[in-house]
Amino acid sequence: MKKPWKVTVLTLFPEMFPGPLGQSISGKALGHQWDLETIQIRDFAGDKHKTVDDTSFGGGPGMVIRADVLDKALDSVTDLSGGPLIYLTPRGCPLTQNMVKEFASMPHLTLICGRYEGIDERLLQKRKPLEVSIGDYVLSGGELGAMVLMDACVRVLPGVMGSDASLEEESFQDGLLEYPHYTRPQSWDGQDVPEVLTSGHHEKIRVWRRAQAEKITAERRPDLWAKYVEKKK
Ligand code: 6GU
Image (tube, rainbow, N blue to C red; front, side, top):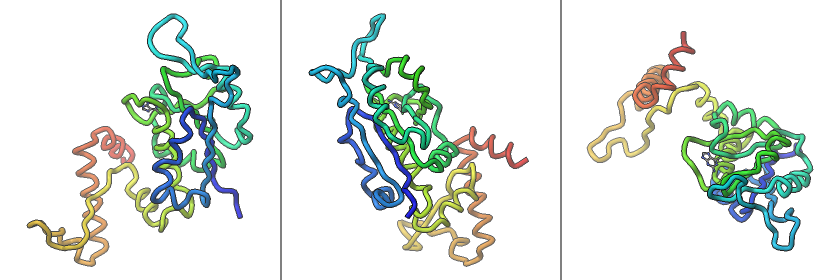
């Protein structure tokens, strides 16, 4: 059997994992299509008090994770060369589906989760991780960001989603938001399912869904809509 896709997470809160990734689609695939390893950064502290952070030189609020402690934790990662080293931080490059597909195609990811105000800049200078953000808001730590990134990767691994058809559908609608979905009952709360969907006319359904996806994208996400229009030209 081929080695499963693997993620190593460095964190001060390993108990948070697998958390929600132990449920649903990613949970079923855990131990099969992918593996998760956590490393407690605190285990690499040098003093008896297990100190991992200190105050910021120059003053200001909050604590900074020490470069020496995190560096030792990274030395303990055996398969660092199997893929990118990623630091989850609000100042990183915003995560996209293209990045997700690229990360999922590598054998191994190493994720650094920061807490407090951040990490000593010298550790970043030495290890040069790819800095990744999951959006323009501030979380109290990188752990939720790491879980978001892993969830997005796991669902595109071969053999994880029930049928690869839904992933194909996703790429077919590339750059557009999802069209609306309906299921039984056909009439509910005074609302009927659009007739075209029960017509059995596959080409008409395809055209209707495309038009709906375009309408929703244009209304809600002018940024995505502009890219889509540009690409279609
Ligand atoms: Cl990855 N970490 C933190 N702490 N805050 C964030 C984030 C990550 N992405 C957006 N905000």
